[in-house]
Image (cartoon, rainbow, N blue to C red; front, side, top):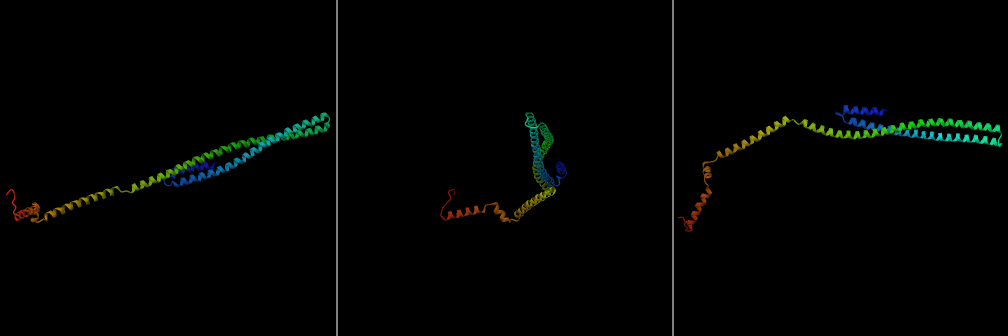
Length: 237
């Protein structure tokens, strides 16, 4: 069937074009499934028609067989009436002969319709196999389509991630980090230099005051003066 060839083309398309454009095999698969569903509808319609013909042929076979039996019984009844004198022998023979001719015609119809019935039954079997096969293929390719769509999502996500990773220039990043490290080191050295300059600019008085605690010395003097005004003497004096 044509749709089988189409499915093989879908497989080829997936193998050859999936890397560049995953949308194409997806669209082709979806179209293939739609085509198979159309073929399924046609096959089901043909199956129904052939089944109807098979049923008709079977009914005809039974009907003609019943007619043949009826003509057989009529011929026998006519001959019995002739034997009993109820009907003229010559007339009885003529009528019985006509009944047997009708019987033979009916038997021919039985043979013909029986042959047609057998052929239709074979066609029905073949069509049922085709319908089942199409249903299985539809189910198979619908599952394949789900898998393919999932693969598209994964491949796109992976591609985008890899693209982002590929666009990162590791050498420039390292250079930038080196420049940042150098700048930090320079800032730290500059801060230390300013500290040295600040220390170097102190006056001799600041250095002397820094060497001794002026605040504590002044407090000692103030305390001695206060005791002297109050007439207090140190116990150690």
